[in-house]
Image (tube, helix red, strand yellow):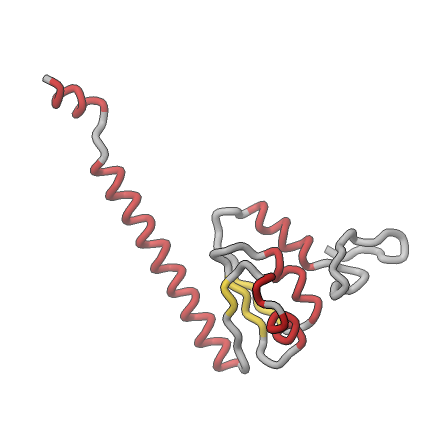
Length: 133
């Protein structure tokens, strides 16, 4: 993920990225390799803004309150597609993160249960033939 900024730029247009690395490029690669996964991104510095902008609806961005990332996001939160959940200290981070994880797990279980029920309730070709006779 690191780039030798003395030979070539990393190609990101975000002025907040450090010259040697763009976490947004790393985030894009991660998302492309696991498109069906939900991402939770935690950050506090200006260099965390670019990857936060790569998150999708359904992902979560967790900026640390009153730190540079939080200030940048607060100035225009509509640029972030993900749900934004701020945190202040370790205890707050733990509670917020565990709550998000439990919510995602519950949602995944509910979706899988609904998919299983829909599969079980959908008629097969054999039952269609029997119903026609």
